[in-house]
Length: 249
Image 1 (cartoon, rainbow, N blue to C red):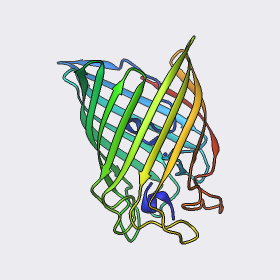
Image 2 (image 1 turned 45 degrees about the horizontal axis):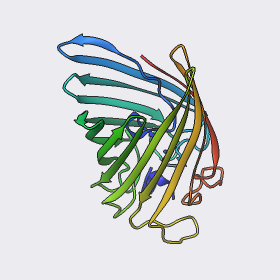
Image 3 (image 1 turned 90 degrees about the vertical axis):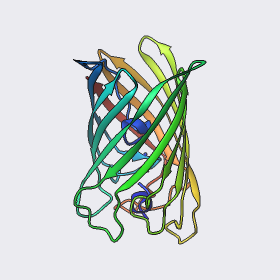
Image 4 (image 1 turned 135 degrees about the horizontal axis):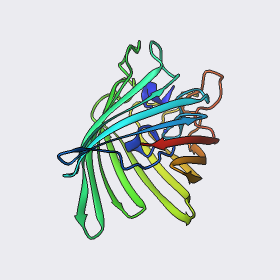
């Protein structure tokens, strides 16, 4: 079963530490404390929490963010997908607040809505998640909770995802990125019909920023790689290499 038929690796959306690196940009000052910024990326595979969303094929992705100096933000992120019927587009809409709460800690609170326009499925794949995260320097930990059915899975409400991510600055615009996550599942089975209550996913890679263009090469996978199969019949969470080029503006 496709993880987005029951679930959906944002390293999806920008807020999800998605599977492609996104260059940081100062954005455009709109006045009154508002800043508009965006991001574009091309990757050889779109992974969300370890699983391919494009059947191991390339994806073009982009988003836009509006933030206020108070810490409040709104945004949208989009990608082509290949796991559902009736649509080939994922659109994510999110909003929240992010700011310093003292002792070097940064708090991030918000909600994200995943939308698949025109999707033709017995249970709607549109999914809502609430999230709360803490960050300190290059390290962060975030928890996501889905009060809705989870990406088209029947009776799959109330799942959690735990995300731990970090980076190591190597100097000269080189960096190592690390990620580990755990997804809980409700009423899920793998391709062999075995009950699956959750799985781990991981990502590790190296990136280079060249004049605002970020080149990233990473390894990604999931502990239960045969939760579902790609259209070619391959385990969708198998270990794979991701290469992406991205730019923030």
